Image (cartoon, rainbow over all chains, first blue to last red; front, side, top):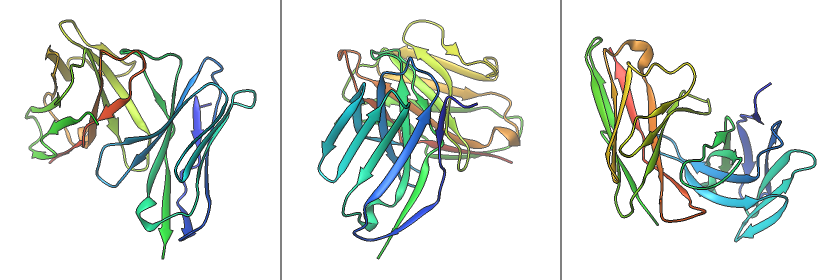
Length: 113
Length: 117
């Protein structure tokens, strides 16, 4: 079993839709949870960062963490064509300069006009 | 935000040659940088952790003699793919975190696409 599972998609939605992206994980030691967005042929960029369980909102993006279920989600409201990208979840046991991230495979999202 | 520069963005080389990829943190000092490899529709696979002034820490299954990592300064880490073969063709990405921050964002480079003929 992989440490982090993520549906690779592709996921295609109409503009304006609410998008739900999810990851499950098996290692209960993970405490820090991140979502990255990666455009084609580019490096990932950080979208959201949460610690432990709970919700965090930033504009059209909401990240949720449920540690009891080992399940994290990223919601995108009023999706736009510019949101079309691959979304990677990532998590780590600790923070600080040397800690490693474990990534999901990424979900490819396409928002159509 | 902080910027990590990676060079070259694309490189094509012949089988048997060596290729060097540079990763620079442009406006912060990074005591630790990470090197990843990404296959199409696959996750980022951590290859090694590069520590300034000391030897890199390689992940299981990654050949340290094939993927040479040098972190000579607080702003530069290099990955050299030695005696490259077609199976080394991949997208290589580096990342770095501002060492001054306790909880710091991990910044990624733009990636380097290596094609070995």
